[in-house]
Image (cartoon, rainbow, N blue to C red; front, side, top):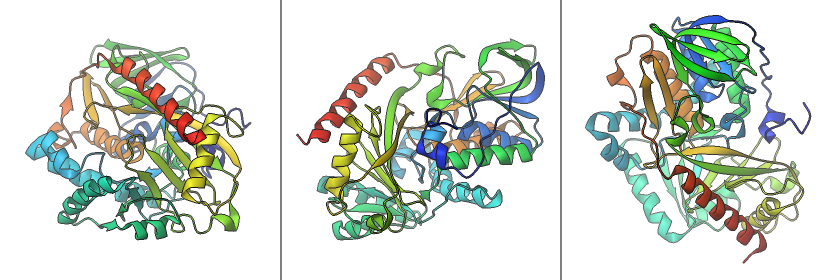
Length: 426
């Protein structure tokens, strides 16, 4: 694969092979799944294991969207602390959601082990780093709640954080031992391999162009044929198009960029020596992690401006690494990319029932690995007889955002300005 075709560093480094599965002609299936990312392939794997004839339609390649462009943090929970989740979802769904998403990293790593997915799994936890002393108070509140629930989470002092990170200027952090990191493209390709092994079918390079209700089922139109399916799951999240009217307007689209250094060798041994992933509490978040080859991946909200060799994003990354690790010296970058996050108004995901036999889990707010995996399993269970009341959160109707497009543009301007300002050190 040429460098022009690679969508991220993970695309190049994933040990799991790509899945190239052309499709021609008409087909039938119990379940048609549109989207070959974490959600679609988890749905296909769990659905096939439960006896459903599943067919995944991916418009590009497996992991082409957010799954292959992910940071690779396998985090527990969501943006909100547990109490806020319980308040938002109520006494039935709130505690259930907190419990299932608190255990989500364990389930992801169990799938990796069961199917021997080659994705560089590291179960050493993640660090939510306080960018300022005031942010440490909020992290302390999260700590108290998680510890009451028995979660292995601990508060780091500024000195502890500096030691675990190998640098940085953080006021402390929240260390969550449940979490970890993976090569996200390796994970999504491994899910595809496992789904195929369970009996699911996958078609790549096939874009769904129409959805038509047909009797008790659906006709999914493509330029290469028509699929007749009893049920359809739209598993496209932030990469949702106009296939179902209005669905791309239920969230605000947020870009997120990353740059990968070349392997640092011995110079990087003291940086994240335990291979924990890191993200901070700043309003415009920064993430940092290391892969098995000793590369650092640093990212933040916004688009890539320029490339790995030159431009605003590279200058931003150079300055951030120099600020955090002044003894590291000059570094070379070998790749830069960005993806998209589907941000909901309340920072909670959704499972929409769009019509009879048509569902979409959506709005992951940057937690694609765990949310996509858990929701894929839940969709398979729902479609094989589980009571909808047992879902992680209630089925809901689609509600579009009037200002979503405008917010996306405003955010894009702010993120670009942040890169420029921090890249030149103003």
